[in-house]
Length: 177
Image (cartoon, rainbow, N blue to C red):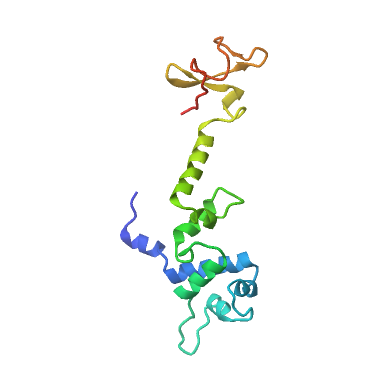
């Protein structure tokens, strides 16, 4: 189902809205506004961040907003990649980020070759099943060019068809599709 353009426009957010949400995330990560100010080499009592968060409107009547210069300053201070405060896609990625001890910002700072190496290692791990993780406790074997599973007799380490467990005639263990 494709949504009409009028619906999509309502789902889009401005960079100011994204930056405001990101600023809240940075304050939470730093522990307080004062801590964020310290990390950004600002006076810990500087009211700018508080004014932005509270949408304070000065004499102009327009709420104070987070500009590009300050966004880049805060990104650098909190070890985030350039543009992190402006990019909703990176923010949404954090919600589904699979690693507990690696920040998405750390991964983003890798060069393309390093990212490829990480991806290759993860793919290699995903392609070979771990013992005990295959269905019904058996091992995967290649039979007639299709993947099948046979239960293994733990006493003889043989399958029901009399083959040694652990793979095909080539001696390689294969993965299920």
